[in-house]
Length: 528
Image (tube, rainbow, N blue to C red; front, side, top):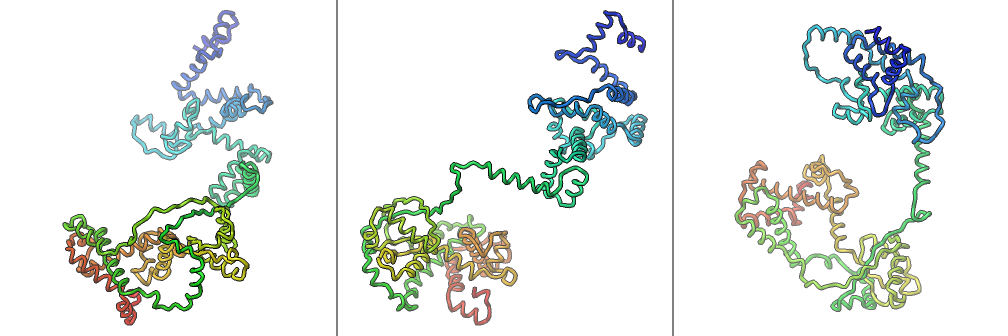
């Protein structure tokens, strides 16, 4: 066999030499014939694999030219990254591949035991069976265009990554200007939260650049991002968006625009007493019946097992009838015109004056006519407070327009509810440790993470409502001697029983005499 093969490839006979040349030739449309022979040797004769590798490596080491230089900077003219690594690394890549895949003494013993026993036993996958990206099912993303060549060579990871890492360290250690790979690696390590000691160690080993270089790179990237940011206008600008709308009053309240009548009432607030704002007996009855209706409605809506109540619809209608109507007037269609957005900051006294002047200019009315009638300005508490402060500072000005006499500031309806919610949070928040029934304790039990000092309307209102429902249902359990929550679902109240409990609950927790009794016996929890 050896003499025959030597004759074929060393013969000087023209026809034999021509046939051997065709066999060794490389054609794009045909398979490279020597590769097939080499693969057959490699697969069918495993004991000869080390000799094959050593022979090929020694020949490649002595005959491969390494004087090729890259003369073009065009990426399209360069081969793929894997081909660049193979061509430039030459026999070093092959030598490292053979070195890492050669079996050690432990693997040789395991191979001999396997041949002796000839028993295939399943083994648990260990970290050596993983791919470069993690689990085995993710291996396809790291195989590449030519397939998992590194698996056939015996690698447990994609050796290209390891070789790039090693060559990057060697190049950076030799020349700090070749820092593309160490710079990128150091940046990602620093962004990922790697400690300064680890970065310093890796920098000393040449794996990445220093921390100073990383911070300098981050600064450069930030400056470039700002410099290359594109805007419609070259200059930076910001507007103070204040939205406004104009609502016309109906004829029924036309007298509200009478500025002279408004001026006659000025100063009489100083003569007011507490009796002017104390609710009357009629107001008390309406509030009491409304509280009873609210308690009944909450029990009907949130008590467990309420879907089994036979008279549930009748109870709900009775609760709604108990509450006083909040619409004594028939609604009328209003004439509202949006005024758009004004570039004015109305969050200060100076800003609110500019906002009022902008509204006057928007309407097209001159200043004398604008200030001749009372203009109702509806806003939040800050708007009203700024108007009062600006009027106080301008009380000695020359014209009604400048003195802001025409402005009648009012709070929006929703802002009354906002102020009431904030008042409850400030007065009744309590302490979660000392008071187990406080809003603070309920906030913790419900895992509400918002700041109680700066609570918004929706979160605070939801907590107050949730706490009130819990207190009402807990009082039901105490009054009916129900010890467990599951037993409460079996409660079947009648309309009279439900109304009686609601009236008792409102009487116990809203009347001043009961609160004073609790204070006298130092029961602050009950009083709050």
